[in-house]
Structure formats: structure tokens, C-alpha cells
Image 1 (cartoon, rainbow over the protein chains, first blue to last red):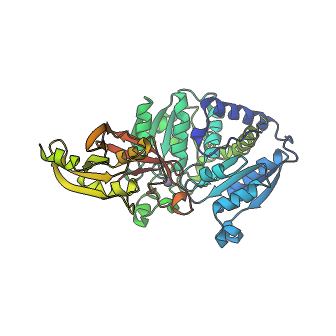
Image 2 (image 1 turned 90 degrees about the vertical axis):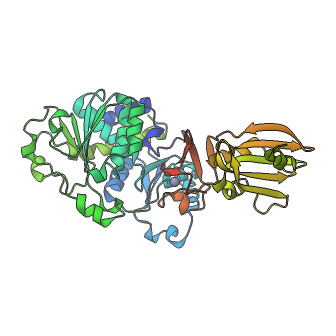
Image 3 (image 1 turned 60 degrees about the vertical axis):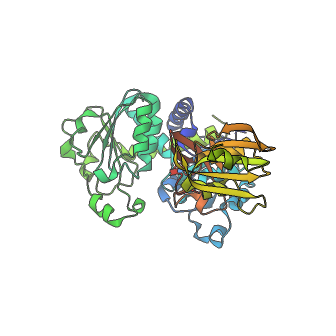
Length: 302
Length: 150
Ligand SMILES: [Zn+2]
């Protein structure tokens, strides 16, 4: 059995990314897969995230495996002071894989070093959430027919938004061009721009959503997340900075699709939902197939 | 005989660490685990150096280091030189080499990093651009600079 974990999107090579996307397509065509029958997978949510948990647990069930775990750490031995290491060592003895979400950054990497089974990171604080990145890639591939040479316009919180950072890292395999639409306070951090420079990837920065709306293949909208801010004043200044409405989409490219990691608040108006450009609900559904593919791959079945 | 030679030659057997930035001398003692050892240690701070402004020097009697131990010093003093003394003579002179990884000594500057909440040995990859050294945390993937971490 394979012992590979998925903690950060950088853990997968370009070939592994493409392999998982290919497998996800197979599962989308046939959701009934029972080849993990007899396996038990732990779903350890040290902080609540209903959306991600349901998606993973549905994926596990559709593969025929059983789930054990918790959806909130408040009743676990962790709340009684047990170390993360001890919890992981104990659970490792029972299961074939661990899916975990934890508020501390780096916790999943640490768990993967202590566990005797593969670990899938379902979010470690503001750090990484690789299954989100893979479902973003899957949705891009599905709507554009390719991942090569696309123009991606990332909008909103590019400073704290981990999904944009991981997507940028993953897309760097495929010769993209980036547009970063963000207010001054939430600009793409220097280290990511340096990363793009080192790979010779072009990017443009703007504060106006109107500027490049008509020049992109993917409009990747993000929510400004209050919990990422240490300064409440900074949050108040920027929380409603962009609002996409259907009337703004008259001259966009025909193939343009709008993605959003959800939940959305005010950044995408409801009237956008009925345009042919909205893809965020389908994107969320795609999470199921991609998570099935990740689990199958890490357990050595696909 | 110049002043510098005098300072160095006062040691019979041991190691002389030279060209340490004056402000990092005490941190250097810590990073090399020299606090609390019984060997005789002589420290010079704010000595004038032609190349490096004010420098510090540490002389440890009867102590010899493995290279990877010494190379930790590069994080605080990239220009440091090491003189191995036997019988009042410099038998070996070398420069420290920047280590690729730092395990168990620095502290991650990210307050939400798991290493600051659980009993975990820290691990960093060293990123050096000239004299600008930063540390990439193996766990939270955030960059720490070396000023706050020792
Ligand atoms: Zn860290």
C-alpha cells in the first residue's frame, strides 16, 4: 500500500495532478465505485467545516469505505490536553487513511510524519487546502478543455486567500497569465510574485474589477474572510470592495467562466447565477469527484 | 606582532571563532551550545575590524567542533572564520558554510504555526540571498527572518 500523503499542492508533480484529474473524470461519469469496501477512513475535523467535511465523507462513502471521526474538537481528548501526536498515533492504528482539518498551520504536515497511514490535508489554518486546488483545476480543465496558456483573473483577498496562492502554484505548470485584482491592502504577497518571476510567468496587478474583466478565461472570485484579519479596521475598509453583477458581463469572452471557492457573501450578486458564465455551483460539485480521485490515488487504487 | 595575533595566540589548544558581528556574539554562544559548559571561554566584543566594522571574537579552550555544528554559526555570522589551535599554533583555518536546513534551534515567527503550540522540533530550509538570510518553515510554509528567531 502506498504511504503518500497530500498536504500541500506542491507535494504532487504535474503528472500526478493530471492523473488525479483524469481519474476524477472517470468518477464523474460513474459515481458508483465500491472498490474501497472494507476500508475505514478517519475524518478528523479539529475545527468545524461542514461543506468540506460533507464533500470528503460523501467521497469516502461513494468509494465503498466507512468513515469514523468527529466534526468538531470540543468533545475530543484534544480538548482534554492530549497532544496531536498521540491522537494521530492512536487513530492511525484503526484506519487506512486520515482526512484532517485543523486550525493550526503545519498541523497536517506534522500529522503525516507521525501517522502510519496516508494523511489528506482538508485545510490547516490559512496555509494549504490542496483538494480545493485540485477541484479548481478540474473545473478549469472541464470548462476550457485545457489547462495550457490560460489567462486567470484572481479577484478579492489575494493576501490572505490561501486558495489563490495554491492555485497560482499549481497553474504554474501550465504556462498561464495572471491578472491580480485586489485593493492595496490585500495585494498578492511578494513571495508569490517572486515565484512567478522565477518561472517567467507574466502577471498584471490592478485595483479595478472593470479593468481586465473582458480579457480573461477564468474569473476566480474570493471572499474577504474576516477570520484571517488581525486588524478589524482593515477588514471594515475592504470587506465589500468588489461586487460582480450580471450587467458587467456584456463583453466578456464567450468561454469565460466564474469560479468561487464558496461560500460567497456579497462579491457575486445572485443575478450572475443565471448567466452562462457562472460555474461555482458545478465547481463545488466537482469537489466530490476530485476527492474520490485523491483518496483512490493515495491508497494505491488508481 | 599585531594586536590580533596576540589575541589569537593566547590560546594553547581550542577553537577561535572570528569575524562575528558584535551584536550576535551572545546569540552565537547560544546557537553553539556553549552556555553552561565548563571550558574556559574568552569573549571579545567591539574589536575593530578593517573589513567588518565592529566585530566579536570567541575563544574556547580545549574544544573542537564538528563542521555541521560550526556551520550553524553561519546563520548569525555568514563571514565567520574558524581557527583550530593546537600547541599555540593555528593548525586549521576555515570559513563557515551556510547550512541547508536548521533543525531544533530557531523558533517559527508565525503565531499560528503548529510548532508554537505542540511539542515539535522546528525545521527550516535556509534561503540565503547574499547576507540576507531567511528561514522557510517546514510545517507552516511561512518565512521567518533570523533576527527574531534565536
Ligand atoms: Zn512555522
